[in-house]
Image (cartoon, rainbow over all chains, first blue to last red; front, side, top):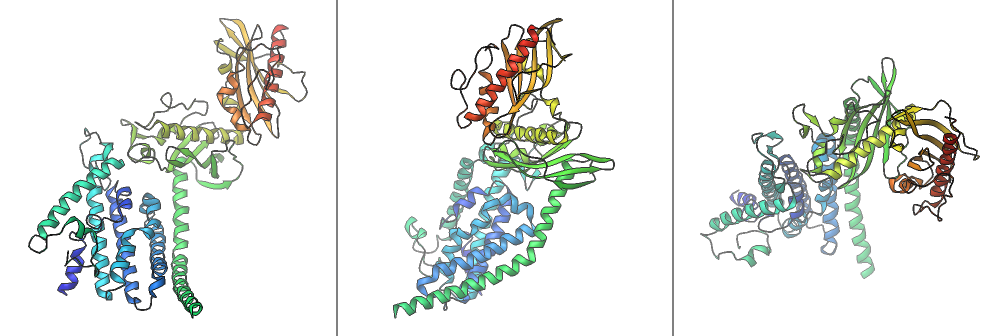
Amino acid sequence: MKRLFSVLVNGLIVENPLFVIMIGLCSAMAVTTTVANGIGMGVALTFVLVMSELIISLFRNLIPESIRMPIFLIVIAAFTTIMDLEMKAYFPVLSKSMGVFIPLVVVNCIVMGRVEAYSSKQPVLNSVFDGLGMGLGYAWVLIAIAAVRELLGNGTLLGFQIMPSSFEPMIFFILPPGGFLVFALWMAASNDLRRRLLAGRKPEPTQDSCCTLPADGSAEKA
Amino acid sequence: MKRWQMIKLGLILAVYTTVGCVGLAFVYNSTSKTIAQRQEADLQAGLHEVFPAATGFTPTDKVKSTNPKIVFDAAYTANGSSGTLGIAVKAQGPSYGGQTTILVGVSTDGAITGAKVLENKDTPGLGANAASPTYYVDKATKTTFAGQFAGKKLTDPFVVKKDVVAITSATITSRAIANLVQAVGKAVSDVLGIGGSSQDPKAVLPSADTVRTSSKPATSSVPGVSILETSLGTHAGAIVGAAAKAKAKSYDGDVTVLVGVAVDGTILGVQILECTDSLGSSILAPGFARQFVGRKAGAPLAVDANVDAVSGATFSSAGATALVKATADALAKALAGGGL
């Protein structure tokens, strides 16, 4: 149980897909103009990630090594389409505002990366918790970036006016350069926390070892 | 051996694909109805928003876009308690970041009843404010960008920064949407038969202070040219010129022009109002019509000789030029003979 929990929290800070593994960045930059989009995209990716990791881990012994990539893609694409259709049916506003980025979850490197590096080699329960942890790690970053960008760039949070009406929205934060800036500041804060969390352990992670995934996908060795 | 291995892998892949497809088919079946219902409800809500007075809407296919870049996705007749109130059109056209889709209602009395931006891919925080329900071009009255079109007359010029308030730092988006609304207005007014009102002869008679319909229409001796309306322009009581709207066959459609001529036979202004030729709508660009200004009626006017054709629309340019010349000649003759 304790091991499962450590798999779950692993994705939040220590091996955060966006800040440490640094994959899936394009969608993170594009949809984080509003908090609602951030939440929606976070939930959508978490769903696809957990379901894909579950299925692939279940069938990991039935997937021939040489055609594993097309099979991973079929599974990921199926769950992405399911989620796209469900969102269109039950959350049409959200689905519209995220536009093309929902179908593009299928090529999000986080899903392919975790399926390939982790769940194709790990037991089912571990895979599900890894998917959940990675998904939550992705989601909190999106929400954190979106909160800053929406508040400063539009004066609102989740669509509610927060800033006084005298506040002139700083459009810079809505535009891509502002997105990069906010992303970098959050990354610095998160990676500083990560360094302190890992300070007691050894060896101290270097830039090199943090970006190459260990074979079993866990961060224990990092 | 190798071949069997390949067939085996292919079959395994086929199994995974089949299972995936069956799963998707189930999800599609369970959601497609809801999605269709939602879209229908969205559309109805949007139609009621741009046409608040209407009680129901029936699809119509009468409204046609004359501009190849602007596509009318759907059009609906707005029904009220006492018959048709107007037409609402869902139209899309190019904007800064891609196609933008709007819904516009036009009433039978020649006014925009409302406009709503359905889809806009322009820059968030700038152009995307066109679709925002909380971005106000007039904070005092809480008028959104699209909301400012409600009640606007089709005879208005629809010029951004003049009679249309622009979105801050998003002039291109503002212009694109204003043009789109105007295009819908024009197309609908043609269908509803309230067209003529938007083509003011004053525009081609800049030196006149009053323009009135002439007592007698000018006539052209050129076969195929029909002069639809003739107006007389006066300045401080004295006749300074005359204008006429004329129509003739062109390449594979019709062309309609508005020509203003001074008393001495100088062409004062030309507007190409409509061209239904395939690929002919590019001659509507003001640059083409402007070359006629200052020419004398009676003097030769021909494409490739002293008029530049719009590239890609040579036949339409020639047709329009011939019509402008015929109309100007007819007007000059009528003015000289005092027959107006």
